[in-house]
Length: 237
Image 1 (cartoon, rainbow, N blue to C red):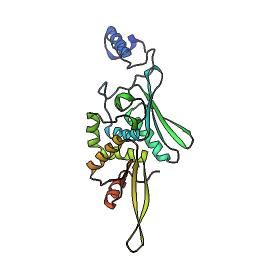
Image 2 (cartoon, rainbow, N blue to C red; image 1 turned 90 degrees about the vertical axis):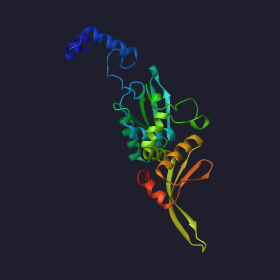
Image 3 (cartoon, rainbow, N blue to C red; image 1 turned 30 degrees about the vertical axis):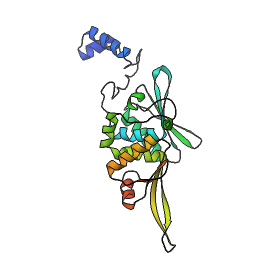
Image 4 (cartoon, helix red, strand yellow; image 1 turned 180 degrees about the vertical axis):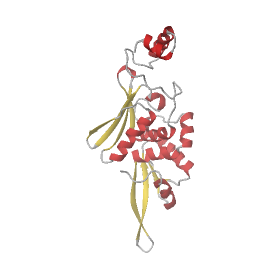
């Protein structure tokens, strides 16, 4: 709307409205020439952040997410997931909207996979792990403010990690007499030692026993541990 109308609505001096608008435009907080104001950033603007949703989205990002620069210094967050899991793909989109309230995530398909995408100038601010190259070829560590969120919502981080790079299945083993017994097992596979450490630290916070059967795999096999994990992760759908 025109500056004069804006000033009349809010009973503020016209020169004040003009000064605010110019400063916001200079800082990239509104679109020059009109349009909706940009979503404020929890890091740059101290905007409110749904921390539970953020911990969940962080898990998805560390597992199957990436950030790419688009036009006009805007970045695209992309989470890739199997097209078979419709409920989880909708969960990803809703989680993005909880972290960036005015987001309009797009679900794009191809090759049996769904890419859930959303654009924002501040994705690198909220995901400082963003950088060139594959995650397992560079250092991945959480910032202090991220550790505080994960310490409060470790279950949400674990949910995102297991649903991105994990699986849940029925395994079997043999008894001394040759008979088989079956048990549920959850496994997480990721080439990044740093991301595996982020997961195991969260499992430790939750008191969930884990082991590392292979170099790139974290497994949860004990009956009581699987029961706790199933309480907030469960099977994919």
